[in-house]
Each structure stands twice: as C-alpha cells, then as structure tokens.
Amino acid sequence: MSGKVVIFSAPSGAGKSTIVGHLLKKYPQFAFSISATSRPPRGSEKDGVEYYFINAERFRSLIAADAFVEHEEVYPGRFYGTLKSEVERLWAAGKVIVFDVDVKGGYNLKTYFGESARSFLILPPSLEVLEKRLRARQTDSEADIVQRLAKAQSELDFARGKFDVEVLNDDLSTAIEMTCREIDEFLK
Image (cartoon, rainbow, N blue to C red):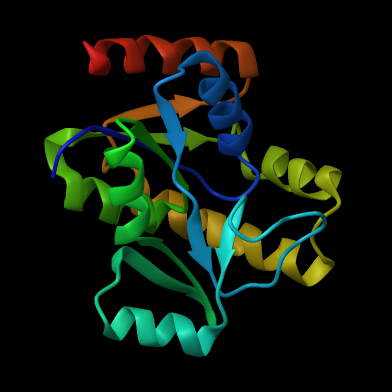
C-alpha cells in the first residue's frame, strides 16, 4: 500500500455525495474512487463516471478472482464493491482516494486500509428528515424508499462508534466545515 484514503459512509439520502462533491472541488489532490455495481444506471449515469456497471454474473466472477478490495451484496443480486485496479490507478496518479460508499463498505475499507484511511460517518438529523430527502430527490420508487429507510436504521445501529469521525448533517455548511477541519488534520 501507498497513499492515503478518505472514506465517506452514510445511509442513502444523508448527504454524503453532496459533501464529497464539495471536497473534490476544494482539494485538488483528491480523486473519487469509482465503485462497481450490478444495479442498472439511474437517470443520466454513465459507466466509468459514477459507477462501473457490471452485471451480477460478471460481478460474481470478479469476486471469485479476488479483484475487489471490498464488496457487498447490498440487496439480493445487487452488488457494490471497490476494484483493486481502481485503487492502483488512483495511487499511481499520486491521488488521495475518496470513497463514497455504504456503511458496511466504509467499515470494510477502514479495516483494509487501517491508518492510511480516515473514515467519516455522515448522520442524518433523523429518519424523518432522511425520508423527506429521499422523496425530494425523486430518483427512487416507493418500494425503494421503504427499503432504503429500513436499511438506514440497521446501518446506523451497525455503524455507531466504528468510524473515525461522525458528522451530523443537519446544516450542510457546518457539516462541510467540520469535515474539512478533520481532513486538513489527516493530510498533515
């Protein structure tokens, strides 16, 4: 291993992607790690930009070939993971790798990278606020929203105390400011 990594995890809708987007603009040495997924693209998502879209059968063969740093079957037949080739590509470019992953993925990445990583858990103010955010983005079906809310509670129960930094995202500016302070300390 070489280089450093910064890991962001949260239940879906907690605001981690918004925070990560801000940080990628602020820190020129940061590069976003593109995760692999077996889910289909949403909206205008492009392969190799937001995700590497891989069908479930191919995903399973890559797991068998030990091609992932971490992976998880988040829902039946729906895989997410971090390809070792993606980490190698970004470190070869001299970048600090930024991960935007679910809670179990974040925990697994922190375990894998150890002291080379700073892990952040982005917390929603409440499950009610989380539900409003999921509905407002209008990208998920009603069934998906119900599934994401149920998963959010179990993720929060699992995650508490397992990340280096917990950031309450009830005010975006404050959450970004706190995150930047922690990152500046980590990068010294």
